[in-house]
Image 1 (cartoon, each protein chain N blue to C red):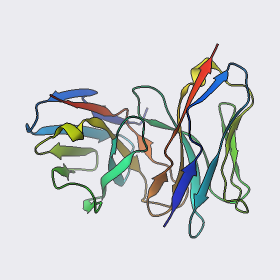
Image 2 (image 1 turned 120 degrees about the vertical axis):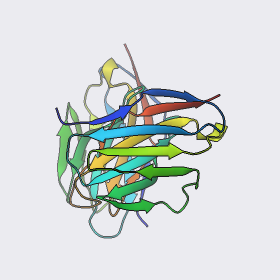
Image 3 (image 1 turned 135 degrees about the vertical axis):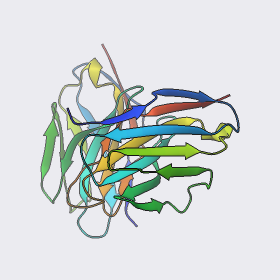
Image 4 (image 1 turned 180 degrees about the vertical axis):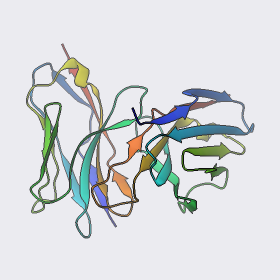
Length: 115
Length: 109
């Protein structure tokens, strides 16, 4: 089945130690998103890629960066994780951005813990 | 800007009870509306959607009707099961997906 896969499911890192979360998709969708979700709150959009075009949300901290080396893969890099960055990180994809009734397809998330 | 207001939880029901989770929206233009469900420890799964006024989305016994006149997209199910326990998110799609705050549903046997 075509899907969005996130690895690892659980990640533990130390305060200030860089960490990378990965996402891959077999849907061949143009758009890939990264969300941060805390305590079953609404997902908060960090940034998205439309093909190779990177779009950062205005309130996303500089500590968070992303790479999309090809259509299938997208990475979330947290350069110096703080305790406040402990959360579930969700990757999602869509055929196009916004409108036209196209849903976003989510992976199962990576739960990040900071020691 | 676009926004979604969702009924606050948590909601606790007995098995086979009727479920309604209210969702209203503010939007310019004609957004598409969605309900997503999130089971513990998992990502969001699309439950149903509607793309225009008076459309009814349905899936797994859940239904929601896109009401433009009341700007609402309430989620309903006639008889909930323990397995329906999850967090439910209403969302609308304009340029970006806007999510409601989520409603936690617990169904007890």
